[in-house]
Image 1 (cartoon, rainbow, N blue to C red):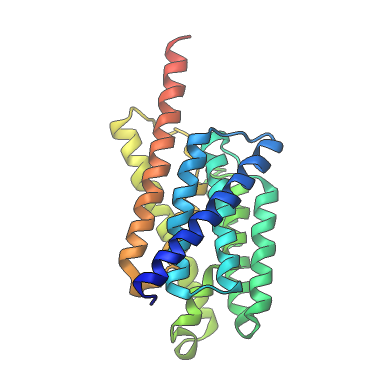
Image 2: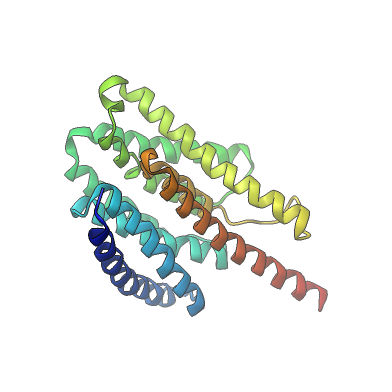
Length: 256
């Protein structure tokens, strides 16, 4: 764990990094016809700063954690596009996947865990989409699979890999990933249905919940307070923009 000075310097560095990279993502998104307002950009900068500071404080600053920070920032932009357009760009999922592959190469001694988690995450979400008759989109499946290739990073700092077989660890990762994502999604859906005049068939973007599930697994459980802080911030950001978009849609319909 860093000392106070180290944490302060990390926050400053991460804030500057977040401004630069989130602005780049903002411009790239605009170029590929996924424009979103600047107040969302400011929100993403804050989220990115908190999330990546958490990663650097827990795991230190090195090339692997820098890759994780890039993955997080790219997927923050992805969920923002999902909130606005109910789509996740394939290009962003591809970059996430490629960064995950680089991380696997750098962490080659445990490559099987990373590859299996990625492949099975994709497969499980594909099955869920088939069973639910398309309740989620193809972008969600690809996002879950792409994130799966970097999700087991936290295991390198535990003794699980020494005590349990690979199949058991991977199964546990996937179960928690799906459970956390689904739980957060259900909680917000219930809130919208009962308090914001939503309907059972109200379309809610699922990408943000996949990212929340990923973050909940990625953050070491010895830092539960940081996990709770990040999840609350992501949940509040997602809730605010989903409810805002829903209200805009309802107001648009009532004026017709």
